[in-house]
Image 1 (cartoon, rainbow, N blue to C red):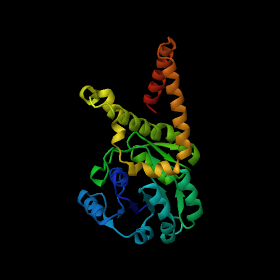
Image 2 (cartoon, rainbow, N blue to C red):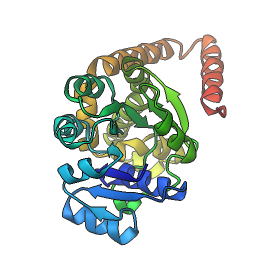
Image 3 (cartoon, one colour):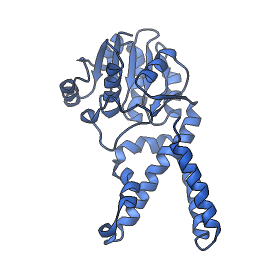
Image 4 (tube, helix red, strand yellow):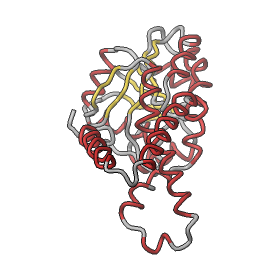
Length: 269
């Protein structure tokens, strides 16, 4: 692999470029982004060159789409129109079914593999890009691809293979539901004017995700509404169970069960 094009040189795209460079990639990294972002990316040494999408697609051996989901969907036909036959195309979108289905209809010259690194920060932009962002974190691919898998290992991520529908079902539970819980909790606490005076780590930790801007989530909700609705339904039912057990000795069993689940989440993999 001699050249990689990063379309969307923000937090994820920029971090992927830095991680590949740190892992030993000696080829050319091409940025496709707004002029302001390109200027910042050059200043940080994230990219070597900047090109329009058509020229970047024609020059690259790997094209990494790291924009919002709707932007990825709209770009796929244009990318495929300019790639060399067999060029590897992947994405970093937070939902997979809509993107993979769209790629199956629009990618003919290239080879598309859906991807999702489960890593990030509340802050965005190439200024926040970090070569170690993916280290130790799950990185989902929707099908096998040896070269891409090799680089995922080299940047320190933990490879997980999931079909698109299963990915979207699981990510609704472990990512999208926590965001909505945090949003609802912050809004509920905010309705009590004096709550902030005594808020401690529990409140600030659990409302951290509520700081995320809505524009990150708009496309996620639009492309994964049914799994998110199912996850919300399961969570609301669990809350109702806890509500019913407030004065019951069974509450201890609920805490024990939840603690075991929390320990499992933290178990190294």
